[in-house]
Image 1 (cartoon, rainbow, N blue to C red):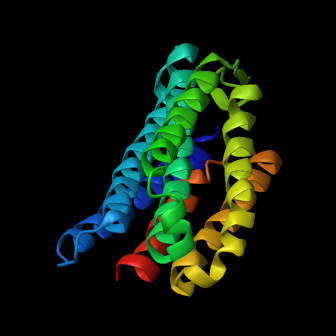
Image 2 (tube, rainbow, N blue to C red):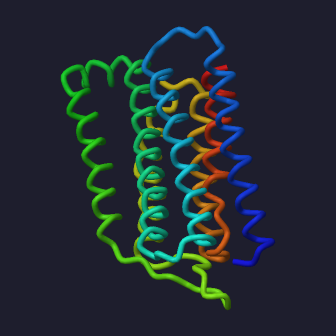
Image 3 (cartoon, rainbow, N blue to C red):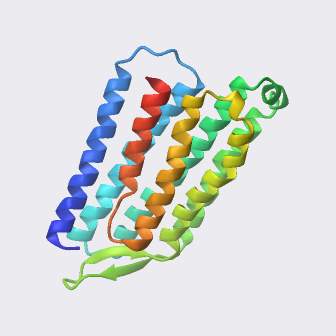
Length: 226
């Protein structure tokens, strides 16, 4: 990673972090009625802030730390938080449909907590898999880590895409039960995820996932909280 690209990546991710924090400050100043959706959005903001911080740790470690294990761990923690965020998004969709669809509501009256626990366990399992998967390091001419690749990199992106695609038929089937404004962010998230995946394949040394997180936080705020 050249000095110019390093400065660009750090600046880009720092701006993403500041923007998400700004959204959180503006959101905290609003008087909103507390419900499941609001609670989920709060967690989404917190997880997103932590996730971008891990990305910044990763970028800084590639420049100033020679320990590849630390570099790999920083990136893996970013991916783990990313997968937790997408599981949280699934839970958001589930809650929206659960609270608006009468038939779905009656069917899941006694199943809400089992579904919640199942989603949490799936996130934990994916986190364990991510920790155990191997990661490869690509070095630049200065001997610094330029980017990571391998199973530990592709797994979280593919997992997030599979999560979105798995929930998609469920969303379409219950589209009449959901406020259209609340489904728009979900479809945009799906689009951002595939764009991020494609960019990561073509340009593996560019960290664009933080930009997607920022756009997701903004869309959720614009169409769901505001």
